[in-house]
Length: 424
Image (cartoon, rainbow, N blue to C red):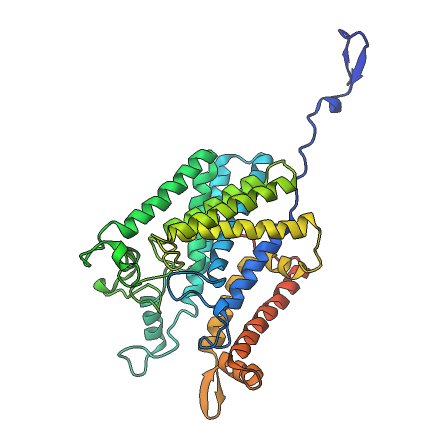
């Protein structure tokens, strides 16, 4: 049925379709976001799986304690890009008409699943494969029981799940100014707790103990929450730390701010502004954040294991500048011939992380082969046979890590070709 408007000097006939609102503009697709996420995932595999932990190029090692290396940027970069994509994804859901209750339920479900995946990877293969303390010839049941007593609760995926969920919930209904206030409160509060508050049992304030991983307030909190030995239920901290956990309880609080800062960057990236203006803004703010983080380092050292407030600000700045650079190359200059490798990694980050973690546990610890009359892990045999036999130790170790990354690229490429993507 047509609608006639007769109160106009020129009678016009409008059809119902003419009164419909214009279609919403198509959301800009930035290839650089997939590339950047893929860079971080591939980087994570590269630094996590060397041929020999005793022979690594310094940039591919974590800083011994305070300070940073390129390796120390990988984890916060992933959290930062997760915050960006969270904002863009939830904005798209709102544009489709999803209500806030449904969005909140999805956030909680996704965060819980990511935590659960990390927890299950930590426990794999769900029995102790080596010696069991105090038992000469343990049964399978005893091995399972021993594994339960030493099953690490926290970890990388667990921190990602918690940080993603809390950051998404905190930014769901808050303004930009409120989010900035939350971030400032958490980072300043963490600084005070870690430096001004006396550490129980140590007789002094935390600032004087930051150089000792076992005596910080974060370590005390990890023992309080994760070490259940006092009840005969085992210790559930990081096996190499025993008395503290690099992805522990207290240090996860500032990690939430990393994801929130990524969310704020996503808001800026999603603005209807020229790309050059958005890039300039990210470079400028990122540079300021790096400077502030380096200055804060003088009184609260940059430290990944403690995820210090200076580390949050510095790495967020580095992430913003790095992402803006990738965006300039990929989406502004359109130089894309090199991107496919990283796009494929960026499309399936959960499979890459979970699968590579399970595989590493198998070949580094569980599966063993005979070599020169001894039983050694499969990884050690592959490393010695294929790489260490003709390369120098550091180059052999790097070559093994690169081969591991390429192997997983092959798996992810096969899944990509079949459109198999794990979405949590």
